[in-house]
Amino acid sequence: MRFIRKSLILIHRYLGVVLSVPFLVWFVSGIAMIYVREMPTLTPEARIEHLPVLDPARIRLSPAEAAAKAELGSPPGQATLLTILGRPAYRFSSGEPVTVFADTGELLEMNAERASETARLFANLPADRVRPLEVLTSADQWTIGQRRSLPLHKFAVADAAHTELYVSEQTGEVAVLTTRGGRALAWISAIPHWLYFQAIRTRPEVWRQVVLWISGLGIVSALIGLVLGVIQYRRRPPHIPYAGWLRWHYITGVIFGLFTLTWVFSGFLSMEPWFWASGGGLGAGMEESLAGGSLDLSRFPSTLPPVNSAKEVEFLTIQGDAYYRIRTGAPDPLLVSASSLRIRKEPFTTESVVQRLTSPNPKVKVTETTLMRDYDSYYYSFNRKAPLPVLRVKFDDPDSTWFYVDPRMSEIVGRAHRRERIQRWIYHGLHSLDFSFWYYSRPVWDIGMIGLSLGGIALSSIGVVISWKRVARAVVRKTAR
Image (tube, rainbow, N blue to C red; front, side, top):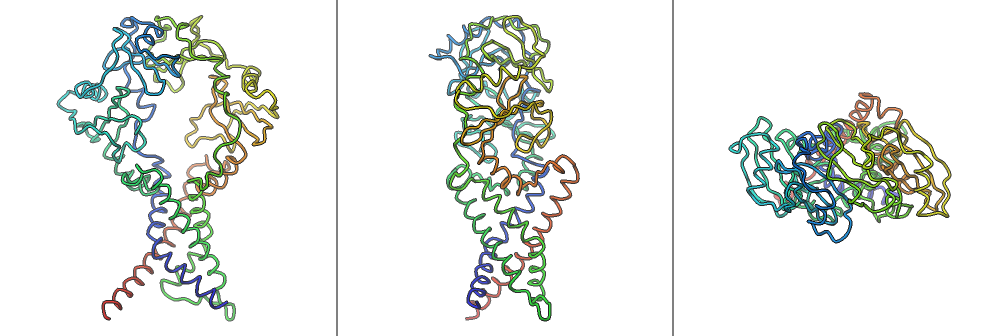
């Protein structure tokens, strides 16, 4: 027993020397992550806000004619009309995007001059206030998530926010926007919390293994700490057998050790070790079935629907019919029939959605359909921007798959099979404590999360002090010899 106790103490001690600083960084950045939830980027709302209003008078080509100019070879997966470089343009996505100007049929070819003009128009500033910096052929710190948009032209904007813009050669649009404030906040939130350092994050498998090993060893250290908290306590007479910093480490460990263990364990699960929750469940053919066929651009005329302030028009097939999805800058896009040019206000029926969801797997039965007017435990949104109402459809397949469909657009907005639902609780539930009874009760949730994180900070900070003192003593002894 004495050997086991001593071994546990030594393992906990040396793991603490290595891991106390990463734990401290994770807890501190975790508080920042409550308010800064992602890396700086160009949000969809900001992108639409900066798009100019389309000028229908300048559109000379129909979508089908533009697709012929693009020489796609097959129907595109997506087709969109927007303004690029002050001109209406169709963008087709079949693998890499292809952009065709709607006034002349010319294919977009980006160069440094056009990228500069794109950045200037986006910033709405004179050319001398938008300075080119470099052309990126590999991701930098702020474009890790936009590697598919490379190459990127980087520009510095002379404004109060010290904005930097990245223009994609593939799309002809600004792909990333950062400000000095956003970059500074990222360095105390997402970057240290997710270990989003460019040197390792651009090597996905290296990054994944680093996170798994640090968090995995953290689980071992926290678990041993809890065990030692029990077996090291002296019952006769009742007392803690430590003094000074070790005593405070023991006390904070007993109080916050379980939270630390569950927190690092859920962080470990966020990397999905052994890919245990991947794959499985229904899904193949569902979106195609809801669409009712491939995108037939011949069903869309060159004349746009009479919608004021249209900034972007997406061409869709929904349940076999042709529709425009028009974004104007308002929170919700408009859905307009391509045949009648009438704005569709009524949702698609539950019966039509369920019929199309079941057609790819006719032998699988639907066990429940529910039109939800509020979020449940598996379909929810921190900022409550996810569409509502939503239709939840449960299947009795071996993986017990649930689908969430936006009835307004007849579009799948969520899916969860059995293992994904389990992972939701042991990852998000343990890491973010996003339980519905307080998740939307701000600032109650904030106070709870910050309080627990401060406990983790205290535990980790004391660990740093103890580790530093121990390492310093070892260095002094070695030097003395």
